[in-house]
Length: 114
Image 1: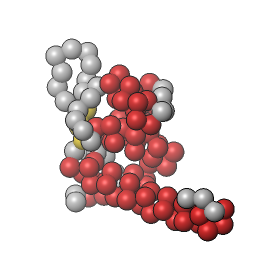
Image 2: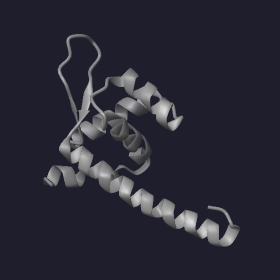
Image 3: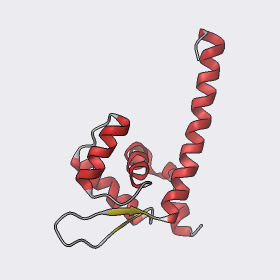
């Protein structure tokens, strides 16, 4: 992985890690412009990203080499996931899965639910 991609791992996004995760997850199945990203994220996560949050996160992700803006014939600018973005997303989601698994195991042990 390039130095640029390493510096762009999602852990370095602080409060933008949530929007970054949602955006990268949306782009994992193909390029989308802002409105399509918003609608897709609402559909799979039940979260509506405000335009300012969405575009600020896209600028950060683009700057880190995790997404790439594509050429467009109209005013809508589509973005696509890069290899570095896919690797960062995979790593981040794996770490989140480990946290979720621990939390669920502990709940099952202490609260009798899974």
